[in-house]
Length: 322
Image (cartoon, rainbow, N blue to C red; front, side, top):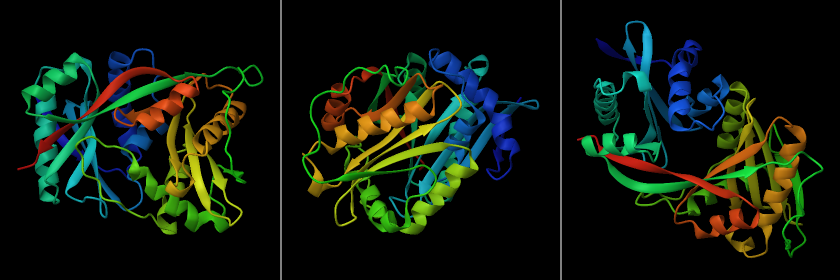
């Protein structure tokens, strides 16, 4: 008999209990990807600043065979929760996914969310489950991959460079204090990108939110690399953020250019520099991945210029909690 139990995110055992489930799903659905690490799963489960998260696990005996993890922002569209629902391949078609879905929707309704969106790679298994449980596709992302050459052997960069007197500033652990407020303002423009049928109101992060997110990254042993373009007035005009774990695949997270500085080649310049930097400092990395909305033609053009190859698609499936 399958039991559904809520797990505490603060308990170090939670990641240990759920990691085999996560690894088995990735091995089945993404066989060419590296085996996920505990740090990678912690990144999936741990809430960012000003967000609330919940994790529900399905147990067969004492063994976890599936889990759902959802999070909602206290500031940005609080009625919406977003997350993941995974079931070990060996325990599918036992009703485990449906039980996890039911429990997650009920708990989300109790905390004020009226709809939940689960993200998943586009596979026949996922689509069949979503259709059987009345899920509605609300966005599609494309995943692109960049194969990394060893440092010093990379091909020449495409032509083109930024056409204004920007300097670049790099950091890993903490944003420099003198750039903190400007960096927080720039982060708001993450939400300029298309997001399918989802309605995501604009939100201006503050310095406290940036510092909280940095602290969380340190706690879960996720290494970040940020390269920012800074104006002569010491304002962040754009930035690129990448993540690395102890696997061969890193993550290109954000590419942001503030509206007044767009059209000057900053995205290309920052992406090139950030890629060279992480490649030099994380020699075990052999490729990077990035996820972008299918309608984001600007970023897909940037990816194409830099040699990224589109790999597969992901979708968000929406469920009402009522």
